[in-house]
Image (cartoon, rainbow, N blue to C red; front, side, top):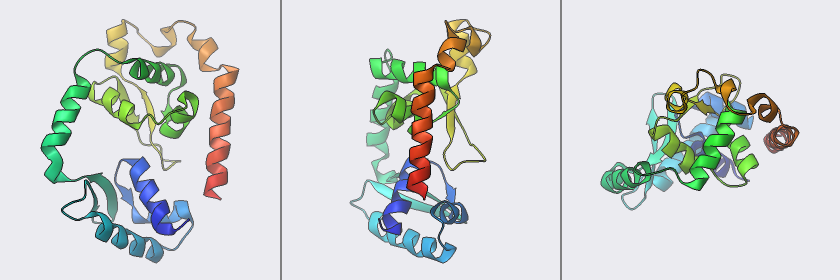
Length: 187
C-alpha cells in the first residue's frame, strides 16, 4: 500500500487535525516522506470539483468537506439531527454507553458497520463526546453528562446490568480482536 493511500486513510478516519510528526511516527517513516505525500494529497483534493479538501495550518493537517458545499452539508446535518433516534443510532449509543470510552474502530468491530456518521450525529445531539487519547492516534468516545441527565442517571454505572455488560466476554473478545488487528496492520 502506498504512503499516500495510508495517509489519506489516516486523515479520513482521524476526523481531526493531525501533526505531520504524529503521522510519520504512526507509519514509521521519515517526516520528509509524509510531507511529500501530504502535498500530493493537496494537489489531488484541493480542486473546485472535489467535495473533500486537505487543510494545513502550521504543522497540522486535516481532511474536511469543501467549504463551497456548506449549504448542502448544513441541510444534510439539519435533517440528521432532527427527529427521533434511529435504530442504528440507538444501537451505537448503547455500545458507547456500556463499552466506553471506545475508539471508532472498536465500535465498528462490535457493530459490524462503519459508525462514523452515526457518531457525528450523536455528538451533534450532545449525547456522545470525543476525547483525545494521548497514547493513541484515535480519539475515544463516551456518553455525555447531558445523556445521563436525559436518562435521569447519576452515573453511567446505574444503567441496567452495567457491570455485567461492561465486562461481557463477547465484547471483551471483540475489542481484543480489534486491538490485535490494529497492531498487525500497523506492523
